[in-house]
Length: 215
Image (cartoon, helix red, strand yellow):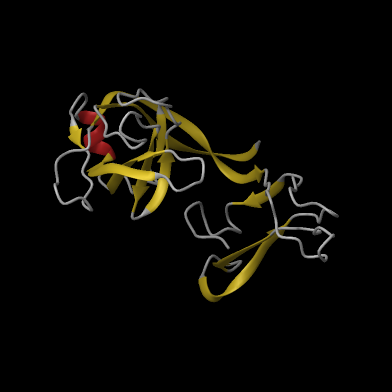
């Protein structure tokens, strides 16, 4: 659920697949690959996870032109092997821009893992089709937060009464500061180590934009 204004932004939907990815789940296993697209080191797009597949076809990846730094802004496309513990294995990456990705269809980009001694490709990445959409910009997002297996803070036999607080280094005027500025908080839930809080509405402005770090 999100709140929108009348302004619109252009999104490119990339239809992507990979060919002959490296195996990350053991000698006889495969990989569970997904894609992260980054602009200036910050994620701007994600794919779904395709389980046990070295030649995956992902659902279209939506990229906002503005978030990508324009059509010529440098992008890094990274492919990972999903692990349930959150320690995803890096498969490989390459650099490009939205303009190139949308024009050089069916070009096979080499996925390189620079940490490996032998720099041979860990597979290839391909964009087969691009759709262009104009979507309204969101003013705020309603986000569902959950936590699991929190520490007990009310004694050995007690639980915790958790709540969540969010801060940003951006102030109300949109200027970066050296101190944390309060943005929002959830309600507190009594005696619960696996809380599911009510949706929390975060305005894009109060967070300093879509790509500023929050604490």
